[in-house]
Image (cartoon, rainbow, N blue to C red; front, side, top):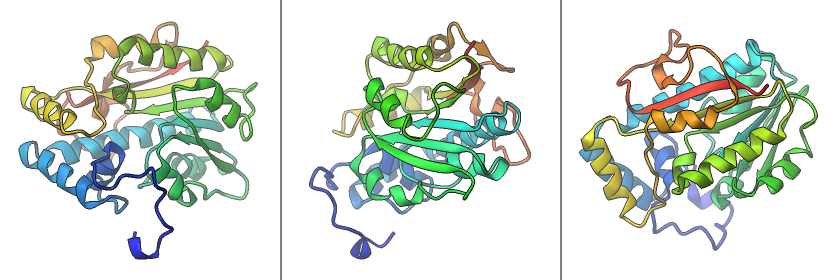
Length: 267
């Protein structure tokens, strides 16, 4: 993006402090980031070069799970929580390639995402996309906003892609997921992924980043994150590392440790 040609930034966007969504965008090769984000991303990558590959593997997990949900599970409604900045293979692009009548609602509270929401609101004529600006922890606001586009009496695919580490308190993160899955109808699905430390060097670099003033991200082990799926019907192969969930010809594989995810049906 060319910053000289875009709309004036809202005052709540502080471009002098690195922001996790913008750093992630930078690692993925996007252009919606600022010098502070690039500096933080470069500092992280200089100490842990695999981080860019991990970001791509996380994004590819999203692609494959949305493909499964639209193609194999027959989902036509998607609620993408903490969508982040538009990059490649956004949820609506993947789903509507398979079923053009899919309806997708993105949720995020970052004002920079709102600034670029036009890239998330492209849609096929048969389907629909919408954006709700809300904190994902405000589940009433999330669902009330989603209900303007989705029929919440019918199954919905809830997509939570690698954002729950930003909720530092474990019980709060767990309660958030439970509140949402409890209010979605039977036959809905949850697709959820979460980063963990690939090794001690990865953990140390993340701790340095968390102490830099940027929004922290907390690694959690899969033995903990599996609790997000309690009471749900896990799709095979269950909770596995990103590259091992229904890999295809385009799936890269750097490590079995950087992040884990699963898809589960809400009974």
